[in-house]
Length: 419
Image (cartoon, rainbow, N blue to C red; front, side, top):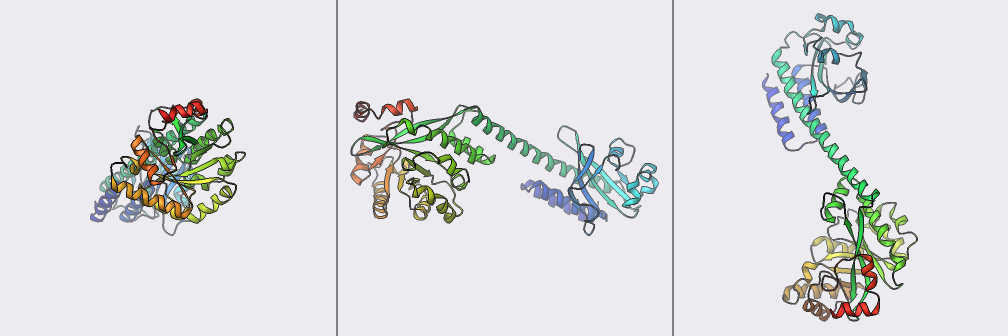
């Protein structure tokens, strides 16, 4: 094996180890082997419905003859004969092989030299062929070249298997997410948001829960849905389900629903909100959501906000992204992150940061909601700082809708506050 071939093989193996995309690794492998062997054409094929489909091709200057996506009937090419052992994998001179000479493609191309080895899937099934060919015979080709060819074919097989496994895993994710939606394995619980001074609930944050297996937290389900390309679909399903409860609530109570920037920008967002009173909806964008184009997001929000829908930025104080959201989006509501409210009664630094955000909200026409309130002392401290609304386990855990509705009965609300 030539030194250049060794170097090419080593660099390709290194690239594969670094997680290079399969198409790139295979393309580079074809370029390296074609150049090393002095061939005109190198390709990787896949067997599909009795045809050999060229998935990757390296044939500089011969694109009119062969390119990725072209195909040939398996009856007209060498593949079956090589797999069956009727033709050798290495043919320095096709004129010495009667079966090759009997196939019209040999003279039509023409093919003077040919080297091809099977690419097999993990279960041993032939996927296709790793092939090189040239116009003229070359008797200098020998078994060492064939071994190098097999090494490159093995690398291509590894990458193809890895990509197929990834595709199958992605399809499995899509099936799981669609099953969640179609079989009603998604439900909504409601956490009350209280007006601190009056001790009366003014809204409910709608939170998704999943009964599907494997059991895991909602954020993991939403992450998987996004990875499967179904993030918008499942977010909209949760929003529609949540808003269906609005008609059963007192007219002065709002519902808060969560949406990513991608969902807000989607063409289906407006239809998901259609028919619901916009002034009773709060749309929350989390601190962790990346916004690539604030101008586009503002344009998508404008017609909804003009109808009275309010915008909230979640997790304020948790990181840089929330400050960017606040500055660019000018939300109606700013939700203090639970990491800021937790132990705020004991931590002067937390009080100082919360006080700064409360002052900022006051100066910009926003209102503050404190999240994650767990003790009476935390609530009292927040109220002293000027926080108007709060939510958290001290005030009420996420609960089924039937329990949430009962909070709006005056006696039940009073009893909950006293407790």
